Image (cartoon, rainbow, N blue to C red; front, side, top):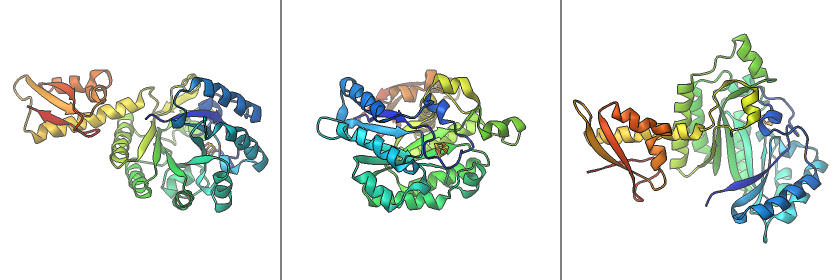
Length: 336
Ligand code: SF4
């Protein structure tokens, strides 16, 4: 069943630093902080609109939730609590920084209806974290992840791909480290350079030279495939489409269908390997081939704007994609 959130943004609340890439006002489209009456209004409205409440969480995003003023935090949690449980939503989800997690705050969250905690890890490379003004280390991510698990919360990690001073090797190392931590969920955000950030100044000065879109897509596709194949749910891949982001971006890797592009790439690779394994090539003619993929994955296998069928047609292969419930996600089997 699809998971969904009722997102309530607390832009930059609790943030002790301004990270190089971040402008939550643009990302969330919100310029003010919500209060109890806003939380109650949003939740009441959602109760009337959301049919699948048991798969829906009230989510406080866009700041460092566990570092915000305690009185304000309690005000928000108390306002959300009556909407959780019997007849209401599944729980409360929060996002925060890895260095703002300790036993005391986890006990408080546990007693307030919070069920899932997402850590803005961004990278697990200390050099990249320091270069982007994160103010914490990779060890903080490991320590916070362990504690969150110990207290029985669902653990999520958020990753930023292509930051200042990162490269393909560092990203693939990050991927391995996330696999080792084995969170329940991951969000993969390729960097989008927004106005009014330090990253924008670095880009304009020429000191930040982003990776190519091709490399970032390939890294994100590898992460998506690696995480999902071991049961880590990738609940976001690419920044959500937003008029504010489109207005304020000056560079980086934004595409409104970013996940679709990654999935096209995963399937191109899977189909290519299946064809090779079956000894099928289009050399010297036009060959018809039937490729079976998992149920519900035909459009991803066909590719964004039919990019995969076109790609193989140019190699002399007319591929027809069919569904087969026995085939795993992101896998392809040739049918004779
Ligand atoms: S990335 Fe997180 S911690 Fe950094 S400024 Fe943005 S919301 Fe705050």
